Length: 496
Image (cartoon, rainbow, N blue to C red; front, side, top):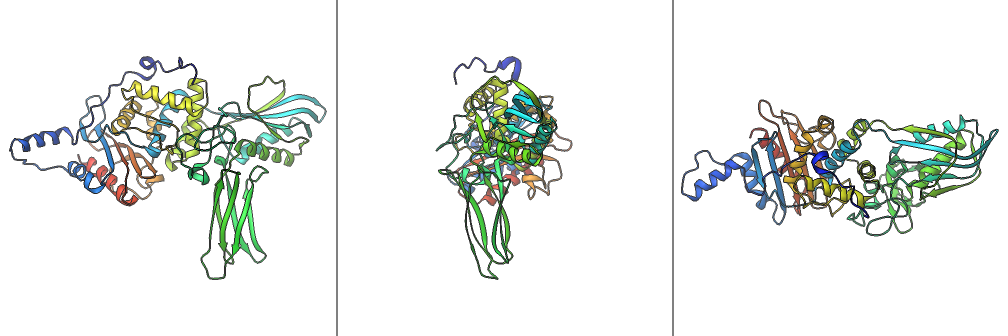
């Protein structure tokens, strides 16, 4: 980053927030019990369910870090549990709590993102001499969105464009990041593994993002042989088939992956008769792909494009003969699906849009600096966030710092917008978890290699709400064991 004078005025914008006490093994009540034991005094009440679970952490997860911090909401809320709470670990998709909070703070719940088309040239009857420039601002677009823009161009009375469809991608930095290279756009944040971008959950970010920068690849075995289709399709999505026929009665299989070296999606599988399966694959050149699909819709709308698809990577003054645009739904409506189903592309796009608004630069470097300044304002400088999704292996935060953030969120006018958008038992990423809990739980899950996380709020009946964070790293046991432990701890906190 060049000039960091944009960094947050921490007193006026974020408010004053003290760091919560952290780092002890048990809650304050447990410390008193431990003191009695050291002095030979009897422990009449015995350990609580919460304390027993914390005491078992090292035994259940040998070699791992179990960072736990929970406290009652409010300025004088009691600390209910603390175990290695100042240890920084990978938060995984708990990162999306931070992404959403900073987006609501800097953009506002009612923010809408505009995608526009500018006719840069002159119109002569039904002929347009110049380029059509489609400019994105990071919104995740649907094919219907691009079709609507194309129809708006046709409504200008244009039947032919004597020029190119230009994708203006200047809203985000285009230098590229990650362990290898990014062809276009900010691409892959630092800390993603080589494997991540090969599959749909690791699709890259881009200024123009169509269908979460993925395509649906469908493999089908018919009487005529094997059929492979791509939706949405364009010349910028090369797909190579390695499908073969399997005998009748066999199970068959099908999957895809992206080769980041040549940008090709490989379709792999063996298909028995009647087999049909769809897999999602990431797109390596998403800006050009989106522009090409837009050009196809122009043709469908009766507008012939004489040129091709090009990119604009630097700001440029343009003469607008006409301009059309569409706007996204307001932010408070779009964060729900992102949090409920933990969509990585939505989160990374939102991080870049937030960084651009707050700092003037839509890049993951700017996002990292923004998050660093935010946690410094909470008295928690030992944090790192390289992306908005939580896929980065470099993201680090402690459970105590996560709860500090949850407390800060609770004081904001948009707090219920965020908390109300989180998964609840039986829904989203909590679809099969905590369904026996009889009080509302609003929490974000998180999973990356060796990490399981769960943070949120418990709305107890007749007692103060509980804010909690359970971050588990270097976990070598099964995923189910880690989730069961988290769920048991939440159940215990309900009755704490």
